[in-house]
Length: 172
Image (tube, rainbow, N blue to C red):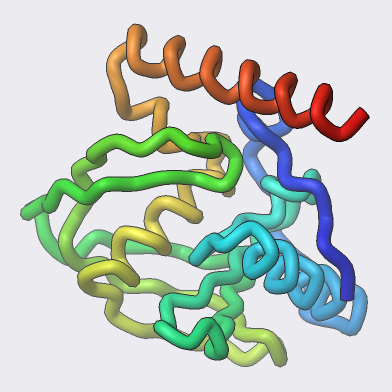
């Protein structure tokens, strides 16, 4: 397992639509293991493969308090189950130190393949619903700041560029 670099805005790869996975095999499981390690190292709760530069329809997340229950979603499909939305403060590992409210459906159905390639279906609510929809957006080339006003988006991108530049200087 390895910690991979997380892409940050405005990297154009974050705007790519990810490709479906043909099958769950050892190579894909190795990617998912790396993604979990990367997510934990960055103190995140969810990560899409495109965020580490791999354009496959794969998501990992861990919403547990202890950070010991990683979940794996291959080729996820989400169906909203209500028109009711709820605002939730979101952040993103690809947009460090930027947080804002996004409205999303309160409940959705999630169909996917798990770590072993088994078909699964479940109902997502609360934080799980927010997180799976946020990560699913990544697979469609959408980042959460795309839901914000143009001014807020531009400020967020500038803030991230400044942060990345300062980290690079500090690392020299």
